[in-house]
Image 1 (cartoon, one colour):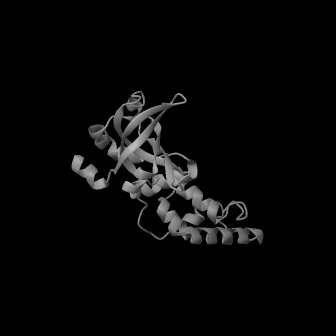
Image 2 (spheres, helix red, strand yellow):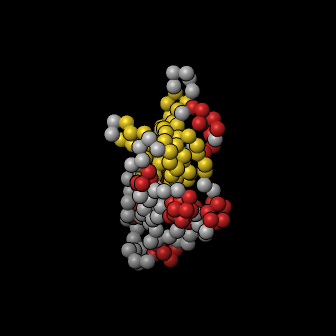
Image 3 (cartoon, rainbow, N blue to C red):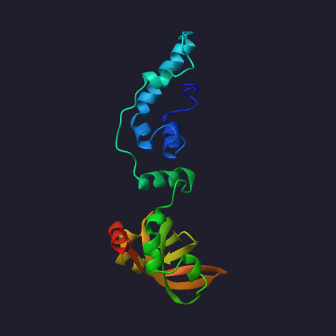
Length: 208
């Protein structure tokens, strides 16, 4: 109500909500669900002020008494984390791997441990946080993934033949197990992918 609508438009307010800026005021999905009504109420308040009309209780709890937000299904933990990563570039309230920590510990060593195993066959797991795609001279796609866990991250090189075996696994924000060979190029360890397996939520429940 205090900020001019030209300085805080719908897109800006939506981004602030998704990033968690108003978590102490209300649940994120509820704010998004009522966004149009919130903006409409703010515009009306500004119109009244611009016309010089002032109420007896201006500046007190007027807004809380008059505006009631409709309820809706709360945003899931995954939705919140994806919003934070998209808008802030990092996870704030938690990390997607927290729920899979014990599964990863049972099935593979941390990324920080396998990075020193040059020219060795290894298996590790984590979250695909970024994907870069190029086209080879033969006209086929090749991927460079950023794989991260709670200890470290590593670049994973994926050649065309590997992509064709399990194309659905190569997506950002998926949690996967990657088997391959650690290659040290320019002093930076990279994991040459030979096999990939997606870790599904039902596997997490079974493991625990």
